[in-house]
Image (cartoon, rainbow, N blue to C red):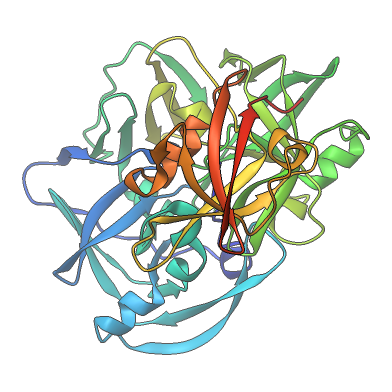
Length: 396
């Protein structure tokens, strides 16, 4: 599952100002722990010395963005507000305002652009935790960034002194407007296809194909299963789902991941500027070093690439003040949940006898990615509980 965040309308074609990264010791900041729930890189920061706040490292945006409510709680000046879009058809409130300092263990910088957005309003429930800010391309322009998904450690290096010591593949990237793009080749339904893709650490999924690409190659069929695969700034995103026979990034084989096929008429996935994006479900199979200054992506394998996908057809969100209530935000009619009578708006109470209030949202989602397993669910609708034995099955 994903909560794709691309601050598309706000930043399209508008380069963010550069930032000056200051290291507190030497010319690097190493081994900063992060939480990789759902593949996303989530870690603690300070903003203007206050916090800690929960930030996501997201190459899908070009700048740093702070949650509007956090900005107001810190007393930051907000100059003007406007609407922005992203994944999904809707919009969310964003703002420009005062610059603010972002501090991680071992480094700090000033986000001069003063970008802010209602991040928690649209991301808190789909993510299952607070999202107080996003750090994007302006940081990657200023530092070589290494993400060790296996050990959940994040490191930053001064580009002037960085020397890569890994033995993995080197993938050329193109950096435009502080975002990175890669050439990819893949096979789907007997077609061998090529395209240009945004590398997006803020996307949970492996690969998504934009609507114009899907249409041009006739990739959607009447039999393609459709389901809500996530939620972006513009709301929930329903895509077709299939599995690739193979995927390579500039010749580097990365296995056979699931692919989602956009049907969006508006928002980021409706754009023909690129063919799609490649996200965390691919990247998590490697120690990834992102070198914008030399336009290289280093992929050091962390084992044989492996992929899974939601096998229930439910898109779940956390609700309530403590985010302990699990809501069925969508139930696909072509997938096991919908066929078993589970409806949008139902509450999920238990899985195989375990109370979901004792689990994180990502733990619940992971439990439902076990293709071929039968799981006993207890749900609630209109205050009445009911039971379902759900046979999990991957789409496609």
